[in-house]
Image: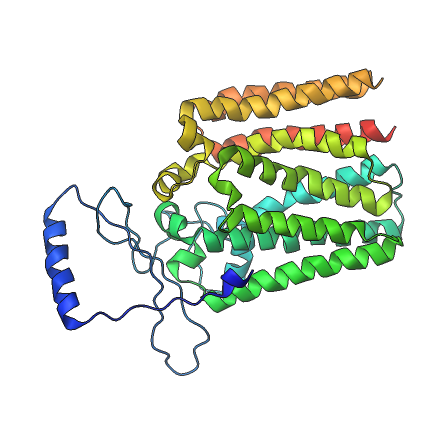
Length: 390
């Protein structure tokens, strides 16, 4: 994590170098096919009581073989930006100045529900959850750990390392627009990380674990989140590995935490949830389509970049549907025919919405597709969890 605290300074050029660049930029500006990208952090001179430097990642003019697009000094929100989109941390956000709203936006609350639901599925799969104040309290703390804290940490650190890509794809986001300073971002990363790990340790004590299973899961998940976003590994550079890691984080890890909290995490459940994480790989690909331009220019081999949008969208829906059908086969082979049929029944509307929205245009209809199809995937997870508990 030491790389997180690197400080960037704006270089001061000599007057001769400035003159040279001025002449060079004039020549570049004269060429209609010449655009440029230059990421930098601008630290304005302090006026009175100013806390921290502001990060402004700008896109200026240069060669097209480097990177294109331009982000204004004060990146505007999208036309008709929504306050709801801002607080959820999704595309179409209103430009906001309130610092706490910006902090929440960085954590992308819209991504919390799958993790919270994963905890519910793990608790259901344990067969030991009861509607008592103590069990409800444990589950709420576990949801806070998995959702706002560790998912918030994951999203914030991902935005930190994606600031140059976001300057191309979503220049209005808090970091590239300069709405929040680098010190504030780094502080948020550490607070969320340590808070999540602390809650994990508390849950182990509360559950009376002799081995701190949930603490280990939190450490492992946090490390996975870091190497997913940060160099030198930066797993997201590889579409297959990165998306599977993301799928496992969203499906496997919270399920394991919920089941370990109320019962025993068994090898067969680990294998089953890792298989289900292939569906998570498909879900992760959905979010890659809106970033094709920036990913290509920054050298990230997301599946839409590597295979093209047409092929990638079929890989996406195939990973989701085939995984669920395979899990239904597992439940049928385990003597749970009703659960298998219920899971297959939930796959049907998913396929309908895939053809209605996603396969038509994965960029234009990504939000509509996720809003209409994902609930059936989530319900399928619960059906599988209940099937494994009986």
